[in-house]
Image (cartoon, rainbow, N blue to C red; front, side, top):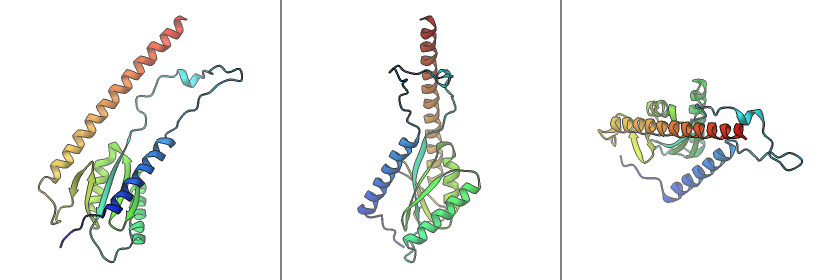
Length: 189
């Protein structure tokens, strides 16, 4: 059984769809408009003086799920599968979003801290061939293309996520320190 890679047109469509999705996600993250009073001066609210929360929303992770080749599967059937999987994940209390790009490929946006659980979920599904996260392919056990290092790729992804989380915590700590200095300076004036 030979597996064919998605065509360039499908890849381009997937990339454009993902880029649009990322753009919309960034816009919906809450861009705060400048608040000015009627006389043109900045308005300071109590909310602006609060300590920044160290546990803000985690950055989303994007990855692709490739399905086993099935000539009878249509795009409509793939959308049914993606909506069923999304429903299953949401009923488990997790908020990943899954989008059917074509009959063999899904794009997924998930919270970084739950990525490993999502990957396990997708790999447990009989329709899944492999998951592609940051260029790493993680195959289902029992597929003919599954390399021996599938588990080490998963561990590498976990380590990378831990490093990214550590960097985010450092940035937040620096930001909090900078804000404290700014508040102290404002108190002196």
